[in-house]
Every structure is written in structure tokens, then in C-alpha cells.
Image 1 (tube, rainbow, N blue to C red):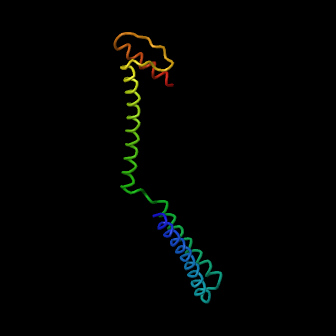
Image 2 (cartoon, rainbow, N blue to C red):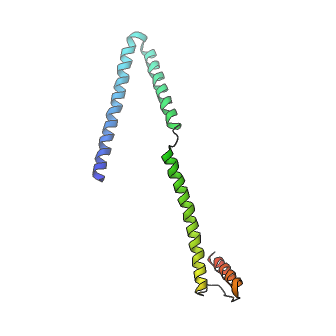
Length: 133
């Protein structure tokens, strides 16, 4: 696949070089055709004006290209996936702490106070979360 893509890129580059050559020769032919009628300076000015108009139109089209519906949908899906991933990571961290408390493993470097009931769970959870920071 890489070799085929490389060959396509090489052929495309060759085609671009020849297309530029054709464009240059087209300008020379147009210049030579206009010189007997308007003179060399006016012919150059006409070609310059035509090229500026074409460049301006192409630049406008390049800058005003709005994303299509598929691109907007892909961006929305990506943002939603990032939000869901952050929620899952936060939930997994909390689930790990709660599991550790249920298994009664003290956090590293934390003095464990053994109060009763809900206060105990909240205290241990806070101690473990603070120990990680």
C-alpha cells in the first residue's frame, strides 16, 4: 500500500510540474497574442489584472469554506466522547476509592481513623482523595 501511495504521489507531483509549465506557456501565448494590438506594457498589465482577479476569487473561496454537516457531526461526537470519557475516569477513580474502603485497605501514608457508619465512609474517602493530591 505504501509503495502504491508513493507512486501516486510521485505521479501527482510530476503532473503538477507539467501543469505549471502549461500555465506559464499559456501566459506566454496570451502575451504574444496581445502585444501586436496593445503593446508589451499593456499586455503585461492585462495579464496581471486577470491573474489578480483569479487569485482573489480562489482566495475568497478558500477562506469562506464552511464545514459541512458530516464534519460538524464528527466534531459533536468527538466532544461528546471526551465528556463521557472524563465522566468514566472520574467515576472509576471514585469506585476505586470506595472499593478500597470496603476492603478496608488504608491509603498509603494516611492515618486511618475508624469512626462509625456514614461518617467513617466520608472521612476515609476524603482522606484517600487528599492523599492522592
